[in-house]
Length: 375
Image (cartoon, rainbow, N blue to C red; front, side, top):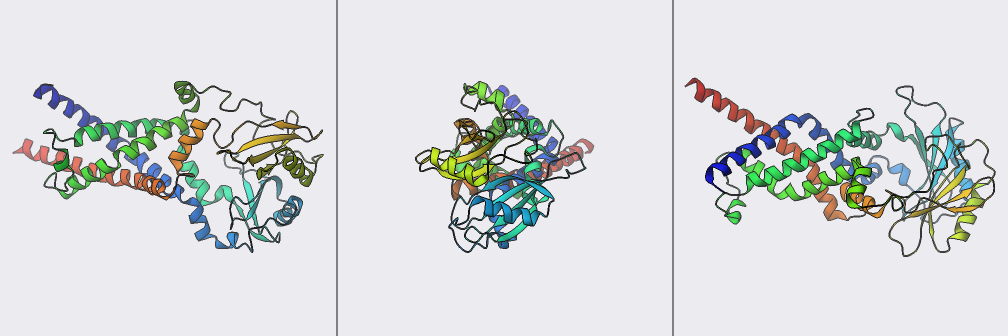
């Protein structure tokens, strides 16, 4: 490659890198910051609401109906039961979820009440409208930037932009004399901001590129599955029992205790994760999420409310096909361990630092250019 061509490419990649950073500054900062916080949302909730996790022991000693009755007493007629979640690990409470009968008037967003219950005793530990809680607010911010309808696609587009920024940043960081080890030193230039930008940019470049691409996959699931050759059957092709936003049926034929017994009898050795009430629609059915022994991902089954017939659910839950679950786990740190979760947090903080330092460097460069032009 000739020197002139290399210089023109470097100028081009610098312009692309610069305008991505400056143009998307307002969107990148809240997106990255919210993602960093959400990695440890469970720990944050335990820290801010310790009363919800003040369980007296790990054993689930009560029948599901006892937990539901305790929750309905706490609801005081304001909400309809939709789901019972059993503890996944020692120290977790039982959680009962119900839909508020009056939807939020601002945009009609569905609102849920959660009740946290002590597993051994059935005592109510806390109640809250989680749709207005900080984690849900951060989820909506991170997933759509509160942009109606097209928000998730816009965030996916930002993922592509961040990936291009990582690629062009690595090109610009790479030393033209090939002395990579020397380039890892702090003093790449005379300015502290320049050195800080280049040092952070290099070390976070690859993880940030991975997080950007997984965001793209999550935002464009159908296109991504087609690109990777994932068939619809792998993503879960069972027909839903109805609109997932439909309300629960008012008077189910089956009792929740009977549903639990049927699920346990049909899936010997599996751990029951959650039981969801049947909703209005075609053939209303109870939905049970289970963790079969020896399987890495949860799966589900359905029990038809009118007949008690057991049917397979939509295959593995928590993201559809295995590739989608893997992508989501990489992006949000689920079941990945402390090291990768820490890297994700750094990947959320670093774009803020890189955007601010890059903006200051750009402004300084423009000021110097004006002074030279005036001289």
